[in-house]
Image (cartoon, rainbow, N blue to C red):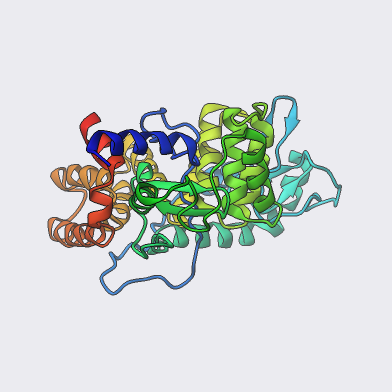
Length: 374
């Protein structure tokens, strides 16, 4: 097979296989489909940057005003329940319903009204502080490692354009393995499970729904993306997409929480809410999604919380995120981050990048195409 035929086949199979996620920067931070990383306990490495939680002091009046802020999460005339742990009953009076409001600090207790929340505050205050502290501690722990490509067993790249989701088996594969297989295969079959790719939208969705029905977080998250974009014959439905993203997040999808955060930024299926946008990016970052870690760093930087921003950038850089490394350099320049620590983070960055590199990935036609496009 000559080079021109090889290139044409490479580009063709990208259209027939499952979609490769679009780069988040290219679509303005909108909903993206990308590897789902699950939170795991005990992942601290020997060389991890000390990123213990940062305590922010506030007056009792300011604290109470913040803690008793009941946020509405309605959208398109419907209510979206975005609490993580709470049931569907008011924590004070026990009233049931799907339109309960949620404590804006700990996001665990629900109330049917502001009056009920104020009545419950004396008893809820300590638990609220405890949960908030636990969230802050988890936010700056060493995140879970990137998952491996199940074919080459090398960590998946952080660059989302270099990974592909296979709906047939619900696996994320590196494009190096995908391209290498399709160059020698007589059929456009899955490199992992060997199921032949389909051009039929109904069959495509059926495969995803079959996996989603088993509570597969990756499949549910991907299905939500189809409803978000109105693809593969599905009618665009942002509310349904949000419900699926929330379910996927609870099942362990870091990317799903990232997409919930993006929805609160864009007002897709919910009202725009900057606080909720940040909160769900935090959940995504805790789960190991480094693009959300970068977003959080930018949010803190833009509000002049430079040291806190650098803590986010350092964690992302150590995991191999080039944007975080670049922004961390700005932190060093203004004295918000120690130069010696930066040297150590840079070494960790190089190690992470090297661990996810392979000749097969570097020689992938898609990688070469993306390089030419800049």
